[in-house]
Image (cartoon, rainbow, N blue to C red):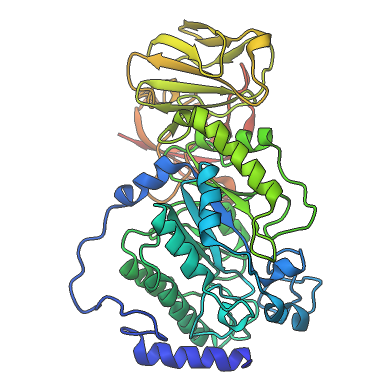
Length: 525
């Protein structure tokens, strides 16, 4: 096999010679010189994704032969990259020679996702180790060089399209195996990386999602041209936020840059945010790639995570990791089917909903659709849960999981109780019908001025400021129409006449425990 430098130099030359036409044998791309039709708006592109709520993440590659973590278990060969794994480079990089997943079936993977109630799938077409799950002509470190030889991306995309399943690719812009990455030869590397993207986005029909990753190191990926390439090839594609992230603090800030569509909390449930789209990515087991005898999450844990994501107005990409032979482990298949069985009964409370009108709490989460509110009681703090007041009246209630509920609404709040014998261990689901739209029925989304409101869900500032509940005591009676909540770490030393300190909080009974603090910038009318 050629050395990495030779591969990348070849990829660069091909990209330069054929950059606006055929790149390395890929299908013809759109003629950039012709006027392109207007791109769909972000809301149009995102509508199906927001309604889907639940997708399958798939991490897979030759490393499954070792049962260790993908990419991160590889020893370091480029000091500009962070991996320091235990598997020697010469061992890890040659696993592909033994990779022969003869039991792989794209149709079977799609069927498993459908049975789980998942509405989209995202496969690691290229992880940080640089191995490609499609037969590339940019790099020969790919599936065609294995004993298996078949095009995994192609077969999975065909199966997904046939089953009306949305398909997307995880793509690592960095390549820890490539010695050019983040060096003085980075331009050569980026050109080849863009050549790989061109192949991946022009061969397999409509691609719904592109899931870039970050490793917390600098991100010199020529973002303007890379985004332009992606959107030219796939105008309706949805792109996550990580191509722009070049540091751990930058990732932690969860700011969506201009060209990205949603942010991606990892291995944790995102906080309530009904202004900016987000998706939690989380493993079903304890690592992203397949691990023998791994501990997998219980059905209760999976439903908790899914419900809290939907209740926070976010999505969940739940990861599965196929075995070396290409099958998804039977234990995982069984757990995913259990999730799907639950969704067959109660999917109306997840699909097509928005988070709220109440925020997440230790008791559980709420979702809403039209005039309906779905109260998911995941944990009973006592005989009754007490929720903040609503601006709409409750006209009826029903326990979807069986039994009866006592619902009491006052100006001070809403109390819900269900007899202990009728509560469900996984989720006691109470549906409330309001006399108006539920999405804006929470008291913290109303129009009270900042001078008179102690708690409120603020709008997001155009510069990416965060939204949250804010504790504030302004010394002015001037009504405020826009409030930007900026993390303290990004605004230390900020001093403005209309700035106030704030604490992001969540409601827990009558308490409002703070999550963090920062600077509040209030803009008068």
